[in-house]
Amino acid sequence: MQYYLPDVPATAQPDELIVDLREIGIVEDALDALGVQFVRTAEVEVLDLALLQLSYAVEAGTVLAMDIDPVLFELRRRVAAECGGWNPVLGKNRHVSHQFGAYPQTQSMSGDFDPHPADAPQRRSADPDAGEGVRVGVLDTRLYRHPDLAGHVETPDPATVLDPHPTDPTPWEDGHATFVAGLIAAQAPKATLVVRHVLDSEGRATAWDTVAGMARFLEDGVHLLALAMGSRSHDGFAPLAVQRAVERLRPHMLVVAAAGNHGAVPGIRHGITRTSPTWPAALPGVVAVGATAVDGAPAPYSPDLPWVACAAVGDELVSTYLEGKVQLRSGQTVEFPGYATWKGTSFSTATVSGAIAARTQPGEVTAEQALRQLRAEGTVVRPVG
Image (cartoon, rainbow, N blue to C red; front, top):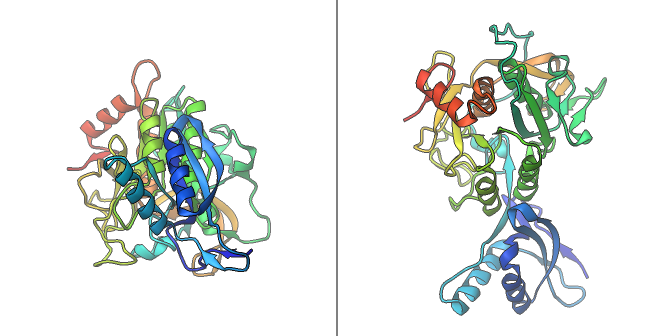
């Protein structure tokens, strides 16, 4: 028996369904009634979520593609008809990205978002004890070893940390976590960065893998979680799994997330407009970070939307990056000296996270209080709205 998945770009896994564990029996019964086979492939108990892999039960030799949208529609219709309009919590396993676009993620952005080689930055003098005792979670790409990050990083998963490639070009997006970590460590030298990876070398991950990574920070005792990533949806609804993860994490840590780089999108491109929400940034309780230019003016790519809570410089930032040959999006190979200049709300998010960490004092000043102080001052972190 043969099955196939569509080989066209998709914004969600076409054969996977995320379901609330407490209601999964109802969903599985409805799938049985539809003739849809399923296997429970993963669970995250602290989030009460399960991942189902779906396939059609068909005669041998039939080639049939799974399409999650009609399955979701029929599940909701059937259950609502039998339960007085009520529906269980279930949704797609969407894709997320640190470039915040439709697939491919860069298509909804406007302008040059490639990193460029740079000299080591001339840092402003930071309090050498800033961030002492503070733990900052970073969920991103893998992290490349860099001398400036030595002693700043804790990596629960050894596979998160890689050595620079001596000869082979490294994909440009692989340096994202290294750049983010450098910006945070520069402001809060005594903070511990707890780095976990989920994004691949194309800067992509599924919502399921992302929330599974987010849930692990509950074990790490972090005070704030920096998410320089996000997703958008054509229907405007937040991914179920991401929403659930934020709800469960917020009582334990401050969640800071990038607003996206789609503020200058003309009209509609790949189902995205300049007013599209970015998740998790647009969720209640999340600190959504936009970007400004060096002079403090709003960056044109940064969304000007009510849910953007604050902004920081996102242009012309210099930080730790890959050393050696890097293959850019254009296919061009460029030599990098271990530092780069880059722009985007990913990096204004790192700037805000570092500033919060520098002000946080465990047991005395919470991350939320530190953020309020910074917003009131309007220096590093500029209030929006």
